[in-house]
Amino acid sequence: MYLANDLAFASTIAVKGEHGNGQIIEVPMKKLDDIWQQRGIPKVTVLKIDVEGGELEVLSGAEKLLEICQPLIMAEANTKEHLDKLKNWLLPRGYIHKHPRQFRPWNHIFESKK
Image (tube, rainbow, N blue to C red):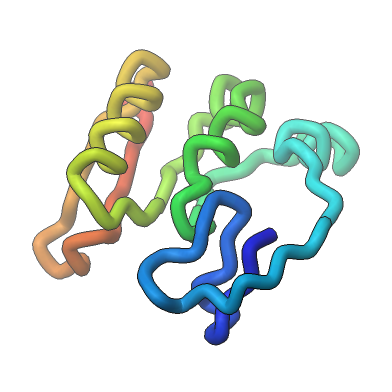
């Protein structure tokens, strides 16, 4: 994990802007699908993902959960390119993109069409 002067900017991908402090630490990681299955496959209705650029990695580790539960997904995308990547990954899986008027420009919702 790449650390930042403000821990809100720490990330497994990279620290944005000049927030980084140059420190890197190793942390254990698990797929969301594995955690979900270990917990007995509970019904999940909403996923809020705010991982400073690692949203696709979280989603790719939750494919079974998304397929079965089809939760509403709230995620950040700070650039058009990042948003396009999320759309390109989620749209073929039956999700549509929404951006409510009252949301900040970087906050997005993906809702299952099923």
